Amino acid sequence: MGRTWALTGACLAVCLTATGCDGGGGGESRPSGLTVSMTAVSPPPGPDVVWIDEGGRIGDLLLVDILARDIDQVFNAYEIEVAFDPLRLQARGSSEGGALDACTGLPILHTDNIGNGDAAATGRLLVSGVSTDPAGTTQCTVPGTRVLTTITFAAIAEGTSSLGFIPYNNDPMDPRGARLFSTGPGLPVAAVTFFDSQASVTGSR
Image 1: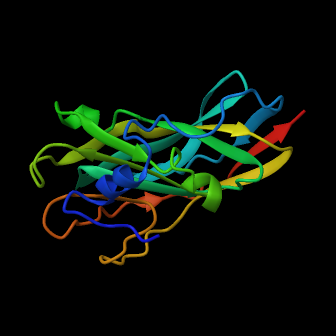
Image 2: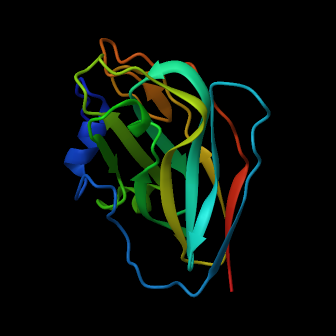
């Protein structure tokens, strides 16, 4: 099913197709009985970079952080699209990380495709956040390192799954992939590097 794109970006379209807009839905919550572990490589020093890293664990759940460092390209929205193996991992939920909250006093619209089952069906997890300020009025940057969003995974089968960004396709009519962008005219995309963290998640007994 194609996505509908409004002036405020794909975040609104995802919200309309999901079961809720709080990013907390999706998946069964019973324990899997598997131990989950993660490995990832951090990017070399430098600005305007986004990468995947472990954010901690809660019982048999793994928290995966999408981190942004020294972003001086302005944005007020993001879409993080990550590929994973849905036969080994289950996305349980996502939450706002605080990078957008730091530059606006208004609520952030946070959505994902977990609650509607799309992430589990496709192995493509889409998490979106957008400032609810009027389009073009908020210009965020990221001094230092901040979390854009945190994703919760559970292992549902033994084995290893890679986690990797799906590259932005540069198609203004049907944009897909990971990007930071502005909701002003033309939805300009920030020139940042989505670093390949070689992230992998393993479920074991």
